[in-house]
Structures are given as C-alpha cells and as structure tokens.
Length: 248
Picture 1 (cartoon, one colour):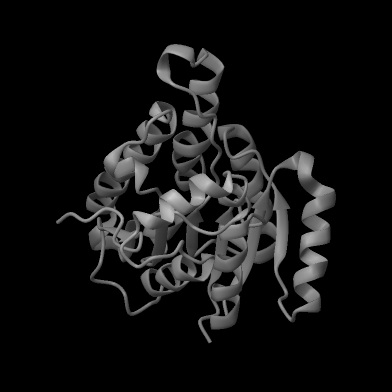
Picture 2 (picture 1 turned 135 degrees about the vertical axis):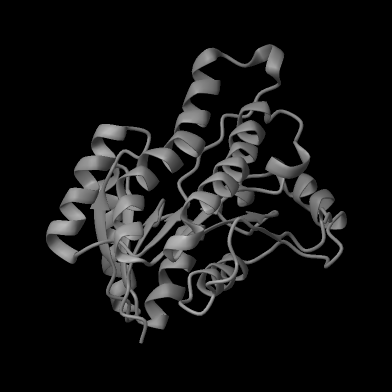
C-alpha cells in the first residue's frame, strides 16, 4: 500500500473519477476537489463511489482563487495531513474563434486551466520540498501541443502548463519532488459525448488506434508517474493520444 495522500483537482469529473479510483486502488488516501457550488452533486458522487467500494474524501475549492486554495490546503492538512501527490486536473472550455472571443472567455479558461496550477501547487510545493518527497502531475492536452481551431484560450493555457512543469521540475529535482505533465488526446467523457456524432466519427477516423481513449488510459499513466519508484522521471510530458499527435 502506498499510504500517501493524493489531491485531485477536478476530481469528480469523468477523468478525475478514473484517477481517483486508480490511486485509491493503490492504497493512497484520495481527496477530490470540487467547486464550492457543486457540493450536492459531489456528495452524491462520493456516495456512488462508496457503493463501489471507494472511500474518497471530497473538499470544496475554487482553484481559480489563490485565497481559496490556501484555505483548502490548510483544511486538508488539518484533517488528513500533508499532500504527497497533487494531480492538477481541473479544466474548462469556452470555445470560440479569436475574433469572436470575449475577454471573459479568455480569462476564465486561463484562470481555471493554468492559474489553478499555480494556485494549488504553490500551497503544497514548500512542504513537499521540506519533506523530501512529492509527485505533481499536470493534466494538459494534445491541443496544448498542436493547437486547435476555436481554442486559442484553451490551447494557450494547456501549452503554458508544459512551461510551468519544466521550470518547477528544475527547481525541485534535487529535493525528491517530480513534476510532469500528461497530454490526453480525445477521451470518452461527458465533454466529448456532447460532440455531434458525425464530428466524433470524423475525429476517431484520424486517430491511428481507431478509438477515443478511456479515462482509465490516463489514470494508468498518472498512477505510474506518481509511484514512489518513478523518481527519475521529471520535467517530462507524456502524450496519451492514440497516436493522434506524434513528436519527440
């Protein structure tokens, strides 16, 4: 059993759920962060997973707010102990072409997808360094690597996560703290299910493995990167996209 404490932002979403389960299966104490306004659905989510045999804690937190993430981490430390593993998974989209994009569309996506990575990581990095152990994984996107029509805000935020990852990895490498990013391709979640079927079929036709990914494909990668033995992998970006985008 790992017996580490893991915090997953956006933990009650489709991808976050799979990550929570994978780390719980390993023996981690798992805490899923959710929006303060989503307490009722988050509680229902927690009860549903409990029926499946998963004992996962939930905590409200506005990850786009530095002040609220400070409050959230203090509450976690008071009730569960320090955070050993952080998975920055919270994210939103506000897709529009740039010429139609409003300032709020830009700010909301950048603040939640990229600003949250700073806000939450800033609260836990010092403790990880002092204790000589930490695993941080930032969930980026294939579109942060290749860009995507109608996603200048999302692609910019996700690309920024790579720069953050590489810089922090250098700062913490000698202190037992690894920092990596994972770039999923198209994953079968409620977000992709909302895409019209003909568009989804067109997307799948361009994926070499011939299918969308499963949330478990990402969760498996997260479990690997956050393992105690994965201490020589840092500053890396792991693409999990079925061959949709290949680079070296």
